[in-house]
Image (cartoon, rainbow, N blue to C red; front, side):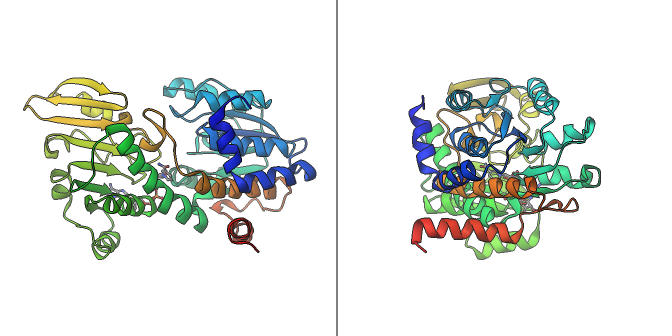
Length: 384
Ligand SMILES: NC(=O)c1ccc[n+]([C@@H]2O[C@H](COP(=O)([O-])OP(=O)(O)OC[C@H]3O[C@@H](n4cnc5c(N)ncnc54)[C@H](O)[C@@H]3O)[C@@H](O)[C@H]2O)c1
């Protein structure tokens, strides 16, 4: 193994390590090709390597802008085909995704719906089904599920993924990324979290635990009320945006912070996005606003917009997922991803074995698989 970081991560993914040994014996993917489009970083590389040990031929490409060279080097060293070296624009990413699909994989491992949507442009008979990792991907695939006609299991909708990754790990890593990129304190800072789903709750909790004053803006009144009962300020939208020194978006929907919101923002506000797609902060729209005079990069991972009224707006990671971008991004904790990827591997194994019917399309992970993964993690940490 060439890369020390990779060695540490592979070592830390204890669930996947156990499965890799089992897969090596059982060969559940023998004769099958798996096409993957996912952030290529050390933890996902460990997942792909685990699948390859189960006999799969893996052809992978990265999501937009999150590919890490060390992970690509590791995968290629293990004989896994990586298409491209990390797309940084939509056009290049589209080309890479289509190259993966041109190999007609039997199983797709998708992250954001990119592969399944392109599969529908050019369907082929050999596809057995696959997995989708994210909320955003589920939202894109639900309207086309009738046309997919194959099992697609949504990892995000497993209760285990919801609490282990979204509710706990995302909050930790977004806080870690804010500190890493800005080197600014959170103590006493007014932070507005936009979206109070699983990720937003964790982000609010972690910033509050880091002594920030947290407010929540959420379109669902019931969730906004929940935020209030959890101890956060829950002001109206205008107040939530204008009072904030730091705004973190975690909604999965586009256009949360656009040129329309620019006049609301306080001088020196720092904007960060935790949602999957780089559309929650409309960076191109903000940059094109006539009041924006200049955009500079005072340090890696921060864009500073100077406005004609003398105020400044800072954007982290150009509006991309803050915990997977900027200098030396770590992403979510190894343990949370190990659990999520164990779900991924078990779901792909079940589909490969023909155990998931075609009507199980864009549905949550089967309860039985949740149970198997929960038992395995408990056994590792607490004993049987
Ligand atoms: N950064 C990461 O590592 C990471 C990990 C997991 C998920 N995600 C992404 O984070 C996003 C949120 O995921 P989640 O699981 O919390 O989703 P969720 O559906 O549980 O919560 C999203 C919340 O945002 C609210 N919302 C939607 N539009 C809004 C708007 N315009 N203004 C205010 N609130 C609005 C919804 O009502 C909902 O409560 C998704 O894009 C998901 O893919 C990121």
